[in-house]
Length: 153
Image (tube, rainbow, N blue to C red):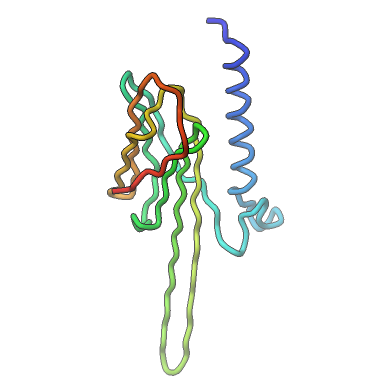
């Protein structure tokens, strides 16, 4: 099957998106000089694992976000892309014999995926349970509209 120029451009755009996300989310081991990109000591920017597939009637996504509170997850559709972000904050305090110790960690998660033409973004549905965010976006034949916020249930 011969691919058209636009298919090839879409493939190249996907590769560039992955390279860009890797730059901002990947950390080097300390023995190689520490963090690279924007992932560093201020917090950790992570790219959660995701499965995305298309059926005859809908687009589905399942994104692994274990240990995240549902209220800290944001899912949006804008400019023909599904964007998912989340924050994980953890704070631990210990008070033993007058000694106070506080440990904090902060992680940020972000993924963005292009949506195929015909996605009915106004009817998108998201549900978070057992550490996985499941998103369903029905298909329709109309062009994509304005940015849409998806409520996570």
